[in-house]
Length: 140
Image (tube, rainbow, N blue to C red; front, side, top):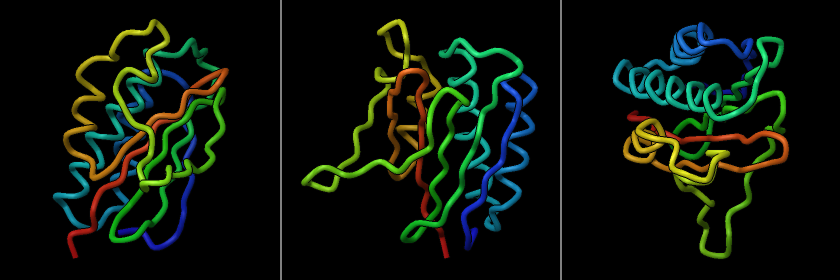
């Protein structure tokens, strides 16, 4: 797993889905975890591209950072800041597949996949933009 925080930026174009998937998962040593990270990065970048009114000159930024026993990946558009979420009194972070879609309906299968495969995940709606994150466990 990575040992320090990293940031990668991509243009807000469909080709960035594959580029982001490859770049971010390359930093993950365990092959099974790398495949999960690749899939979840693909889903969040695709959701960001489809749910926000982005131009090709806009940027999608992906932050990766080590967390207790794993990795946290945050995806945000140039319209949203990549600040850390704060847990509530019970230690939970706000998460849910309906929070990001700008039309008020679930964003589809992508966020359901993230919810199923990530240890924790969440979305912070911001105006403008949104940022989504997930955490996966380090198998070592």
